[in-house]
Image 1: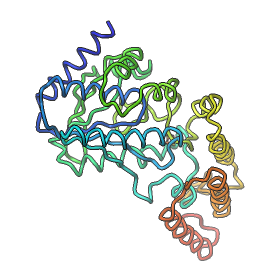
Image 2: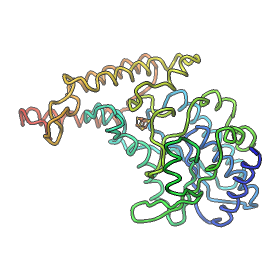
Image 3: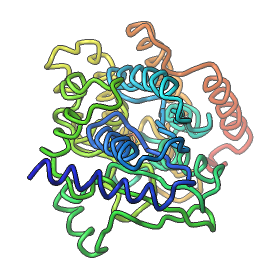
Image 4: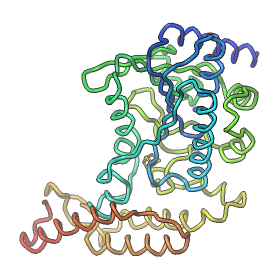
Length: 351
Ligand code: SF4
């Protein structure tokens, strides 16, 4: 049964490739089990199709605040994958995408004073994950592009309901600006056991080690979305994402990794918990929003400075760079603007 499902996923994907052999096939890769299975199915399908050279890119969206253990795993896997692709000589490539500096997580929080995201104010997914992918697609010829996603029908009950309504098929249309492009969902019909079978038993690429993947991602369900779509799963509970994520009340995935011996994650985990705690402290926030309406506004300049000091301490503790010099430059500029407004428009928070 499992074999049948995986074989038919490969057969259908081979047919899909043969239908669009001159398109640019772009696989959105997060490092998790679903996008790994999707990549493996597409590569197996490519071998089966008999197509030689094909324009195929594997893209990874680097938010700058990915869980550091997983980020290290994914980036080294991508490095090895590029070397493997080079050996194959088929024109396949890997690409790292990143949000522009003004959209980065800590530029928004420390520079502009955005409160850490919640379910009702999730300002981060668009800027950090969706827009970099949109920009990449827009820079291609969208009409000649297929974006491959590791979405599955059985991912969650909630999603199942919306999928039924939308009568999902493996081919979908997505709009970028005023242009349409194709989405292809090769593992749509696979359940979790088949996904793991595909990860373990499809041999290529060899640069992704299934055992490491299983150790790191065993408990993650689903992956953060990289496109705007009603059926895309929300970027929150049960999945690995940013180590800073305050959308989930408790970061269970980081806690599980720490309990499993990844002690290096603890300082990040503690910082994230502190960020979640101060989020709703009125003494840390402007009394009005930026547009002047009543309600808690951005973090005060003092609070933003305090957050940056904590980040500096975290950088020392973890011996890593969390906010880079370009981000620090933009943050300093944003502080100046707010400081100027405070001095010149006393009592007016909106700038
Ligand atoms: S993982 Fe959390 S912080 Fe990161 S983009 Fe998704 S919702 Fe935002």
